[in-house]
Amino acid sequence: MSYPQPLADAPQSHTHMHRQLAEPQPRICLRTLAEQLKLEQVTIIGNASGEWQPAVEGLTFIFNGTQWSQQKAPQGQVVNIANGGFAESQYAFEVQGHPQAVQLAKALTQVATGLTASLGCWPSSGLTTVVLMLQLANHVQVQRMSLLPSLQRSIELPETLHLPCMVHNWLGERRIAKALLCERLDWAEFTLMPWEPMSKDCETDEVSETDSGKNKQTLCEDPFEQLELLRQSNLAPSVSEETKQPLRQHLAKLAHTPYEIWQQCADHSKLKACEPLFFNHLPESQTSPWYLMDYHASQYLDAIRHQLAYCQQLAD
Image: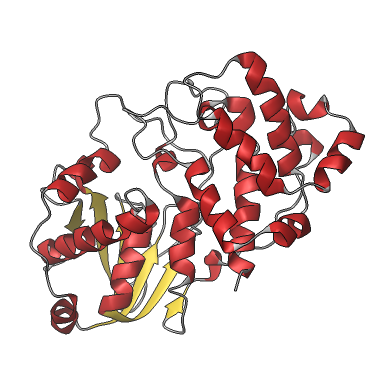
């Protein structure tokens, strides 16, 4: 999946949150809002790839003006949710296409503010909408959303620019979403399959320099202890290229570690402790972990994070 490069002068949704946290709006009663809306069926369409159409029944929520083919489109109502930072709204979100748009924007802002403490950062619009709609609607369907957008950087993206998805704690969002799963929530794409080992075509020079004997030795080690090397590298004010080289090799080995090894070593505390490794909610003012901004290192992050998310999914 590719992501557009952020504009330097564009308002950022994750910095817009500070006004909401510093000057919270008066709370609204979500039960009263649910009684007013009387929502039976809600469909939430994420921004992942794939064709989609508005639902035949009930409301369909999209994000930031997602496009669709209107040929043979049903008559269901489509509601757009935009980040307030981009829409210059007084709330953290702007809702378009619904008569209760202001109330929904207030409710989304209220829910997002409540999720921030558990995540350590502002939540994505997708998770916020799922959490809210489960309180407002009788049945919720989610499509094109796994809460695991790719952290893999393209070779053309300058190291000074961050991926837009990097500002959210996706492992934390999946931790919260897992607790929401119930008969009222239809969310097929949330369930993960084990990660397929990286093919030779996807390997960069770093992994090709490692020999198979070292890889086999790594598989016997606790991969969570290996991740601790990344955490320690982030403590330095700057990381030299000489230091990055062996760390890239560690990442390559972790990306090839079978899920059985991860699962054997995983527990709730280890999984939660890994969450801060994969995001920076204030990249304009806080130094990002070097591997999130490094092309070569970022090629291994999706595999590692997927294994963590899969362990999280299997945990009791």
